[in-house]
Length: 322
Ligand SMILES: NC(=O)c1ccc[n+]([C@@H]2O[C@H](COP(=O)([O-])OP(=O)(O)OC[C@H]3O[C@@H](n4cnc5c(N)ncnc54)[C@H](O)[C@@H]3O)[C@@H](O)[C@H]2O)c1
Image (cartoon, rainbow, N blue to C red; front, side):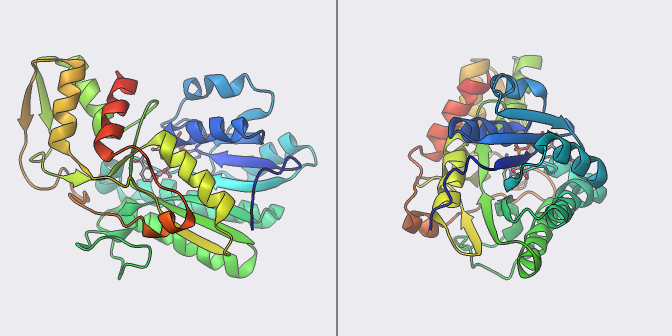
């Protein structure tokens, strides 16, 4: 069954002014949809939505998803009797280290945002949800990560609260949701980044073009996907996966990139000749998963595969973040 564009309805994107949310808004608008974006600008900013804000089919509401009553009033006013077809829930804490220092961060921003989005959906009769999940739910399993890998014991508060969000979505399907799509992202890179290793490296090299300090030993190795491919995969999954609960890993087909590769490529692009100093240790920070491998077999069998390798995505993202 296809879920392709329905002009009678409007899509709601939470976290719309963030890195991935803003690219998703652009893609939904390009498909001809009407879009309402919600963001409280804790990490995202209006500048990410410059093109979208010029489009009459887009409206950005400055709202905290956890202020459920205020959100409900603002969206209902904007809809003027219309209906939300699909909610794309991306608002969350994206600073995993901050969540390690203070567990309240992920309780509030990663779990309660999902809880409140589900409450809003139940109150207003919105029945389709796409959720931005993460490889962090798998914890530090050694095996290639498949959608049915387990048992799942996350090692970060962020991963724990994303896993709890997946559980809340599954329970909501028993009560009022008609269909849900859980997309488990790998590390995502590209222009408009608000955080992440490439973002940090370029920022540090701007401040000190002589030396780049890198947390850990540089040997951490993960799959990186370009944001354009991530958004394409999300839309493909939404259009083609027709079960009640659809859960997919999204990742590049070719390889993973080491932190060392990212650091050296960042230096080449932003401050040629700068030295690189590794702080040492296998983990970059508490809650980091130094290495993981994603199985993309399920997504491939649905008919989608990434074209860029992990290293090519990293190189492209560095150029876009200069
Ligand atoms: N970037 C990655 O590598 C990655 C990997 C796995 C999963 N994800 C998930 O994808 C989603 C988007 O991540 P991103 O990288 O674009 O991060 P981001 O921080 O750039 O975007 C998140 C947005 O949510 C907003 N937000 C946070 N709390 C809010 C609240 N209470 N109310 C309204 N808005 C709120 C922030 O201001 C921000 O604009 C997140 O759910 C994240 O957990 C990202």
